Image (spheres, rainbow, N blue to C red):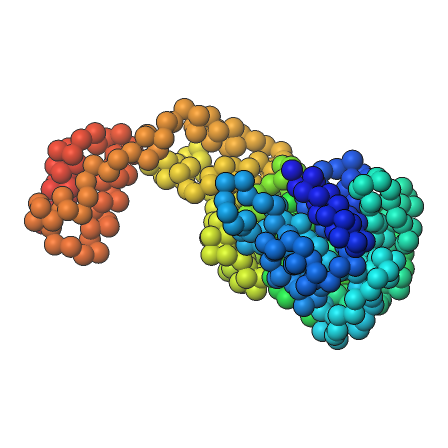
Length: 450
């Protein structure tokens, strides 16, 4: 268990004559009766001293006083860290005191300290600045963190402008913590965020992406995006989402209000701990509506909003350097979210191809929360679910009756026509009109003569 190993790390450092405590989010979560996702230790031992005490370490941040100590693998001579994931490591950081941060993220120099109070006072928020002595089970609070936990407040340690100046990502973290824990952001802290919001562009896009993803999947994504909007951060990090505000929709289909309100309702209805791709799909599914808005004689229209939205989603995902796999899935969610309106009229072949898309459950979930956040009609959703339950996998994705080799053997020349022929055969197979290879070959000879 990671907690037990973290306590072992503390105990080992203490036996070697060093100070050592659990620190940060794990202490906060333990006090809130939550299971910490990871454990951090802070100590007056330098990185070199930590690495001598724990020979199997990863000095990925040693230049900033941070060493990763992996949980020993029982069946391996060498412990492993996969992509430095914190699930199987304890991060050990040396006490540091305040210095300047010219690049808005990294300290200009690392100045070690022997005083845990100095180390805590350079951290981000009071609720993350608590120390825990796990041996005595005593909390050391130099910054009023326990008081703010009880008051449900996110407050920077010391001057908020200085804390945010050291690492601009802290502005997004303040929003995430406030949404996740249902806390308020202290007024001076919030004012500093609004003042410094435009400086968020100094943060790498990957770090912004990861913080936004955490907001979407950790809980209360709706409040997170409301806070992003109120703090002026939304128009900086996702101006395409900010542009949804005030974009009216036809009330007969969207009685809930404008595109922004609709999108927030989807975020509110995401399942607990959703797949990040589903969460981003919900956020971006209507991103093409603001630029396609028009008032027609009959009603408000968004002609081509899906096609425009796909291009906009692709640009946003490239901007934030999503993986190719995640891009493909999120774009597919945006591209296909309107197709459910036609499921009851689809041919069997079209429907089967639709429901066998990769991770179709995400498409179905997106459609459900899209309906629940607008007109509330789940007829297409229920029809699709019933179809899925009634069709075994071998019916949805049957073994092909013909291949390209079969066509070559029958005298057909390889080329672009192969795709047309094989697609027609597959459609007929999915419709149930072709059952065997011989029937398929006869169909081809009759409809696609050599």
